Length: 372
Image (cartoon, rainbow, N blue to C red):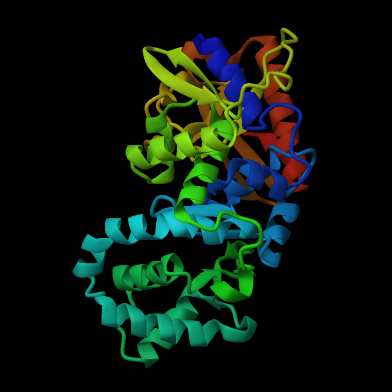
């Protein structure tokens, strides 16, 4: 397997190439979890993998609780389908609590404080009374907690990881942006129905779905993405192949084994024209890998310098620049910057491909979009 083959398969398996998912929920089910701390851009991560979904479709799925936004896998925000959250917590919660242990101690969150705060917040959001972070802080303060800064952040995260809170229906701020609310976990997440029932089944399911949606990838890639140990991923891989020996194919890449979905029927045919993808810097095409992220051809995710945008421009699956959106005057401006290594994006075919990507973003936002 060569580098071009890796890029081609990843674009296909991640549904950045046809056939796309039928809905944002279907795209999420395929990917299992999608990093989402940049909510406005994370909507696009799901929509661009579907056949025509827009920002409102993703927002409605989050409002309805079909898609949940919570801390899972690594201690950061992820979109997760409600049918997958319980069994993912079975794997993820112990690792997240262990990883957060130092911050719990630093902020004074011992077992007694955690239990009491969970009780306060559970009562506050019960019966569909979804609360913003500020409203939860007020409830905690009325019950003797300082509930500011890091202490508030980790009290809420502790409750999420413990299966007490999850995302509720977002509310609009005065500026029009969507703000996260919190709901009672048991009111938003249905009891497990047909999903993994124990840790070994959950390991097998996570590993299978990771390699099917992100392969070719290594065990180390999967471990870093999932927050699990390499040993756990190897066990999950072994269990998945016991269930179905033909579920995954293995090949050598740079002296390391990679695993991937063997069916090649969905590989897109090359038409000779470049394809531009505007993806967020936390897209799964970036964050789904660690050891083999270099096939991206760039250094995403990266911190912006001064006024430089940080999201990622791909040409045929490889990073050639950065972008961001800016709203004002009833329209969206896209600041797209192509690096010198790609010739500044000045050739006609690349310009046409950028124009197509800008038009697609306009359809997603349902507003006028122009290149800045």
